[in-house]
Length: 566
Image 1 (tube, rainbow, N blue to C red):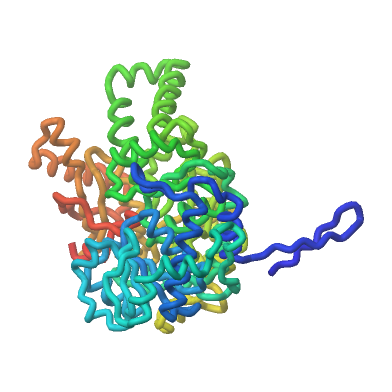
Image 2 (image 1 turned 90 degrees about the horizontal axis):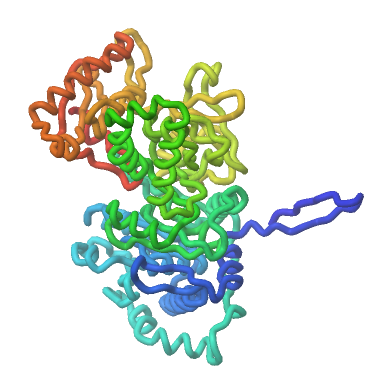
């Protein structure tokens, strides 16, 4: 609990600010009792009171099964209303949630369920079919996320509780279940709430231990600094909830605000996403760069390259009129009600960002990592600087390990209330990133005189040049990705020479009658042109063309470790 002392007309006023995540959930449910809360897109809707009843039933199941606060409960499934209910029921009971990405292979799921010591698993039916219960010996029960039906029981209490759950609920609430019955676990700020296994570009999953306070601090920042959405507003939830970016910013903060959250339960194809935007008309969208980039690079840029458009864009006033029309169409694409789109998870393409700036589109780029649940930096669309990911958020501090961080990039270190407790059962990994309470983010950054942070690349990706120069492959990739018919690329070090791995825009090329042989020749020409812009020590020696896009993490970062040897 935090005491805040204010001065008003010479008098001291003491106000109580309760730093409790579960209190935020509890208050939102009671305040928004009759509002719609969770909807599976084009499916059923739960009101906040429905969510409260479902949480109460799951609490009874946990209680009769012998689950106690601190026990681990794993969730593995696609985004859905029931996934959200299971998560909220877990943390409001005082148990520790363990979200596992549904895209993980079976052997990885077995390992993470066992490594986390989970007692109960909520899982999609299609995933459960491929799992082997004998490889998860600590589980006492497994429930289907879709309807909480029992898949597996290893003790009589679990089977009995699931079979008689409605009866137990009737006994517990003999009259009727009301907002007065909503009372949740009183969480402590440093109490463990969540173990989130990273699925980064290194290939090694580490269990990030996040406290109730870490998550509360993130949610509180969103409440204080994101004016949209408001209570009752629609929100499209399309990022994986097993990742902290989607979980904290798309789901938890909007649930606390009393919003109506729509889950894309199927693979979020462009058509599904656009249909959802058209129906929900969100005021705020949380996204990775890919969605914006695809729209701009496939719909807008080709239009601007047409000879007539090129000519018109050189005519004063006419160019502003045409850009205004394009901006209008973009807002319509996102539902016509957009106040801000927040980009995170990866860098935004520089050409796309420059165009969005030119038309005054309401976007911003933030920065975070699982270890900070996830927020590190943010600034609203009308304050952020081109190429920046914002300023350090409330209750966090940072410094850049460089003698002159405005001119010379260095590693960014952070500390504060968003920062994790450490890695679960991995003291070596925890020790490796912490020093005197500060955590090494592994990101190479610069900062300007106003405090805006600019990410230059990952420390682990940095390549040492022939004379000791620091080469940041991400900076070369940004230039290469802006060249004709390049979809994405990776620059790697092979035998002390830089090699560009390129996945070209095959669909676009095919539609224009360009053969693969001609496309590969274009990629070589791109490298020739690129090398003219690069210093001698960072020039590309050769290019290798891939016919399939690179494998990615859920936040759409390329899994670089899979391609380090070309």
